[in-house]
Image (cartoon, rainbow, N blue to C red):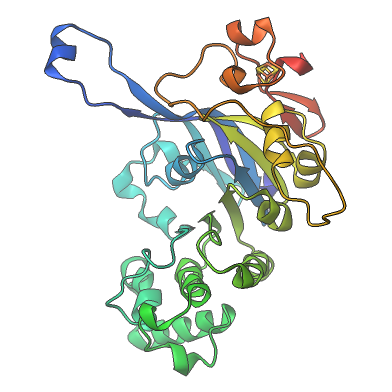
Length: 334
Ligand code: SF4
């Protein structure tokens, strides 16, 4: 089992402290934290596309950035497996993190904001090589850029090399962002809503490209999204996140077709059915996702849960395995 693993995330937490006023300090009020990621455990296998789904504010993006050490973890382990060795990325001093930057990359949702508008495509894609592979000559760098542009199907390459981002469509820009992420041939990529801001007609092309990169380059992905339809298309397993915790986890088919947790059931009931003759009952949740500063006691989902019981307000449910590889945090399965 462990030789299949790439990342093993254990009880990961990322809390952001809130600024305290002088009055708070004088009154000795305890510090408050935004508990964006509040103790989550899951693993990602080699060549796996693992989906992290949930509403905005659930902690998905913070999870991805904390795994990459773009945010410092508050607690927990991020075990990276390579060649039979394992290392806890959470414990590596940030100054010594450079070798891991090569192996772990991110694709952001906004292909407009994530590319420098003043740089040409060739320089945008080559930039990570300058920082993280300075041993390559200028010719070797250009060769790698051309090869990578071909991989992401921005061809004929000579047409794209000297373009600026504003001369490209949203889909082409996202392909440039993917080329930049794969140029160092990483082992792992966080894809944060990679198709949310591009035209619907181009989404399938980008998703297919991720699937192809997994096959050709053996990359594992953490695919972050609020869109269950695209998650179902590309992911092998899914974890459903709510207010900093994982509520349910399992194979994508199981979670999407037979969700166990009331929160997953509500999310999935809201996905439009492609066949208009099929009527499904939408589960409406009360209110909005609460603030991650004042997390409800007991099950954090109880104020919105249509199936809440007395115990839910008092005791936090354990995240436990209910069948092979299927985990859920809900008192209905005690
Ligand atoms: Fe709903 Fe209770 Fe389950 Fe939480 S533990 S999801 S409140 S039934």
